[in-house]
Length: 275
Image: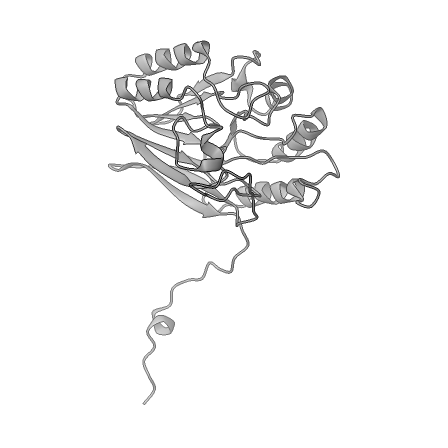
């Protein structure tokens, strides 16, 4: 299994820019082209929410057009900036696993040696997250049925506070319910999220909980200052690969322009001085 995870694309309507100066549509189109050009091709691309910025039909029209250019299977879930009904209407042709119920979007992928469970943590009209009773029951059932097969959950909001003054106030409010499932099911060993626009990771019991950067703009990590800052730090995605006898290995893959790659040459690295 080899996955590319991106998040928080915040598409705008055609011709509009985020905050009137960030061309997220063009930047996201470039991200899709970069993923399509990867030399080592992932089995699928995962997007952990906030596909658009304002939940508008016109934004989803742009998102669907750009994401439709991906040359991989797509697994996707909504975030707090998404409108559930608009999201489902636009994204279900690209990700049929989403089903037909905008209020209960969750699905399992059992094609790999690790189970992938996708859940919706968004709460209509709110920035914070919330797991419904239906979602929690579905997740519990899936974990009971999965046995000891290593399992990863993908959701938008982190289920635990991460020390970020700005983002902790809008994390998943009842994330402790997910932590209780981690307590009960040792196979649940990864929780991958978006929302924070930053690579942050921690551990609860056996589970590593990780948030990832956005595809275009990021959120500074301040422990004490809750002001809603954002910046244009280099974007990145996370790659997840199952390694034999090791398990799941995740690493950061830059989406920003940079020189290279170059082939190592020992004669250049450690040249012998001429006599």
